Image (cartoon, rainbow, N blue to C red):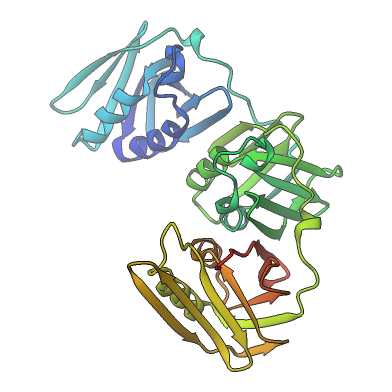
Length: 366
């Protein structure tokens, strides 16, 4: 193999595939990038056996076709630290040579046969949608997944497709985020999948062009996402996702309308005077407006007034973890939000309209 690469494009591609490279493993092939040069394209692949990425690197000249298995960390470091606009990468047997204007590096690699198979995207995608729409659905839910939990199903994000309707849901048991969108249906069968958070974090980086079309295929134990230049494949999370429709309260008779930016500022400021012992902020809603208070021993207390364009229902006081509220408010791009409440010991529902809602449990401020 011999290719001449635009260094900047190569660095960008390596940064993406490195997201799945395993740093510590007894299998040397999993610490490597599989490089394949043919048909005027250089394709880089990496896998941890659960998630895999394949990306076509732009701006390359293929002089000799071939494959190589190259240690990812050193290849990434060499290309990143180089000052040359182009680099020539060539391989002989299992040795890769990287040449710049004033430098030559030789890396000892491994047999290409050691690299595990990386899934190819099938011809029959289930559905497709613009990358920008997919990004929004993921960003509005991914933050609510469980980080460490014995209930493995909530360590991922539920993706449901019915005809042209997409629903994406995440929960950690203390809160639940749900976002809805549309797709172009390419197959009749409905599809459900619980996708690991690692794969979705990589997807946000891999498909960064909002105008790209992303094709999606859900198989029995895998999900695959593809554009014209990249493929991301991931094993699915096993188990049953909680019945999220039963979790969403439908009896909130106290309804507040709040300006998003003002609400964010107020919650953030009130959160300054909370600590591990007093994580919550108290919110008092009535016809006069919203009063947010917080108090932390040996620190002090805060009180912030927020004007509400509209409030219906009896006065109510409720405590929320400010970090949980801010997580949701940060992914909202609407000018105002709607908060439905029932009582101080019942969950609150934050909405922006029909396509996003966020259920958050209250905290005890006694």
